[in-house]
Length: 144
Image (cartoon, rainbow, N blue to C red):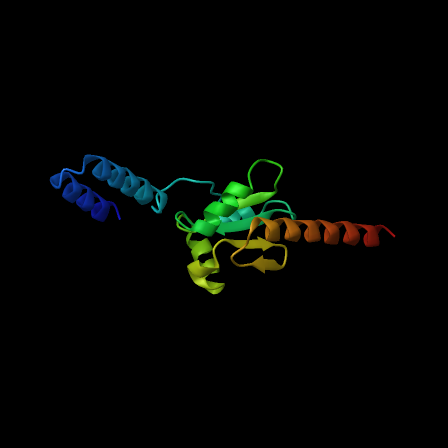
């Protein structure tokens, strides 16, 4: 993407289209960064994410995946019990993702026994609420 964008920018420069060349060059650099597996973002190794509390949702995501980016933008802050696992940085997460349909399933949410492919913020919040209710009801039954 970067090479193609920069080649197009050079062609635009040769045609004396300076503004378009600059815009294309900036856009291609941004998109190369955004889609790069090297882009940093929230990441917890899958093995560590599985050891977190029982109410923690594990979200498998990938840089450049639009649904993952949308979910990251919607679910921010410490109020959410989530562990973000970058599948490009964790081979075990890649294996798990492959078992659930590959990159077409991103973002993949795991919470308790539930798994949701192509998860949205609403789906995640509903799943967390249901898991919280299940744990609360299970605790009440054990106390009786």
